[in-house]
Image 1 (tube, rainbow, N blue to C red):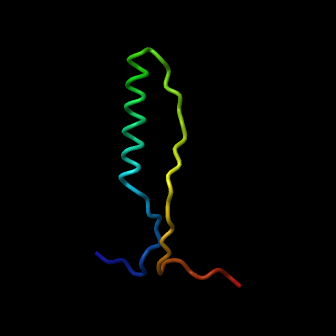
Image 2: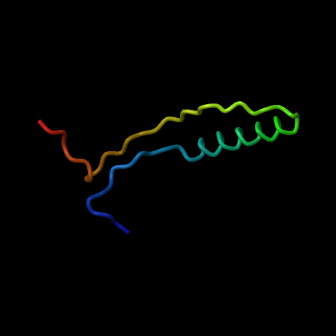
Length: 60
């Protein structure tokens, strides 16, 4: 299916997201088994903006 105009999107590394999620889950399970509270953490993965036809030029 094609959309017109082509939509601007954000490209993300899906494999890196999966690895980060699996590592966080493994850590949470390990901490829970040890009776420790899991410390929430912020994971920032690189992204790339893919500009396509749905983005207009900036106003002058």
